[in-house]
Amino acid sequence: MAGGRIDQKGSLLKTLKREVREELGVNLKRIKKLFKVAVDKEYVEFVNQTYLLLIYFLIEPDNFKFKLSKEHKEARWVGKEDIKKLPKNVFLPTHTKEIILKASTFK
Image (cartoon, rainbow, N blue to C red; front, top):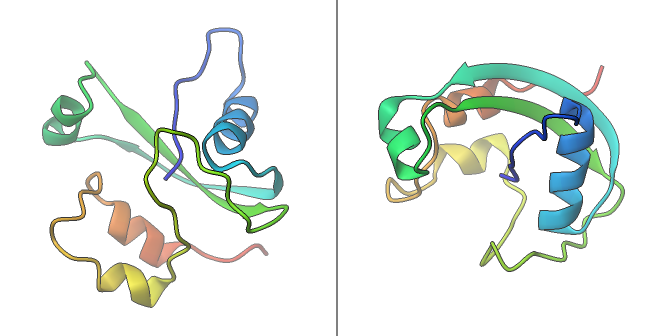
């Protein structure tokens, strides 16, 4: 999951494109906004924030050859079946698994 803060002068889509390019080294071909979720207290404390709103997007990159930033140790694409099998020690914000499972395709 790539993520970042929206600059005061920046737009949501510009921020999304910038963060994906910085963290994964790919550009985006298609973008579809899925959901917005106010994050629970446990995750807000985990990332040391006062308030956090997660906005989920379905994206299609221009290629699948990641060039990870130093922020990440690994990256992989996971399908709906994969997300169901993630070990409990993989920490995801509240509702992330459910959102991924409900995510549609580009239509």
